[in-house]
Length: 167
Picture 1 (cartoon, helix red, strand yellow):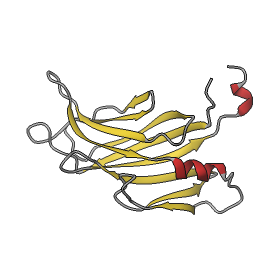
Picture 2 (spheres, helix red, strand yellow):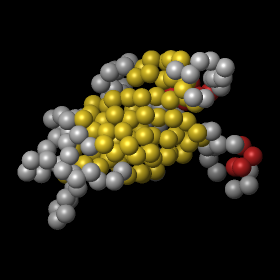
Picture 3 (cartoon, helix red, strand yellow):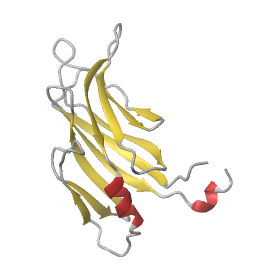
Picture 4 (tube, one colour):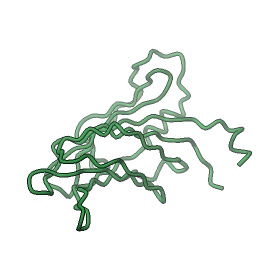
């Protein structure tokens, strides 16, 4: 069995200014992929600024594998239309988790991740210590599409080691 570091809870908050793929709107949903894992949000009907507020959980064993988001427009009779994709790294996030932070004020910024060629960030993203856990909020600019961003938030869930031995 591979060594599981923990669980990453990804809250897909919303889409911003997504591309039109139907006559005047789109019916967007998001697929999150990491290695062999694939998760999906619900479809939001006729909305270019959808609010999902949906939490998806990935099992993390290798923090070097990027996480990919793909946005699609749900179609009834044809293949779903692509509405862009984005990816992000969790390396800095996992490094912050490994610091085993405690006894620091909630809201403390641990690391700032700047937009660069290695990520799809549209603005600075902050890894923070909030309410006893490491969190990161980010806005991702969608690639391979004329417009659109996805807002999401990460937080880490530790897996107690003693539970894993019984699997």
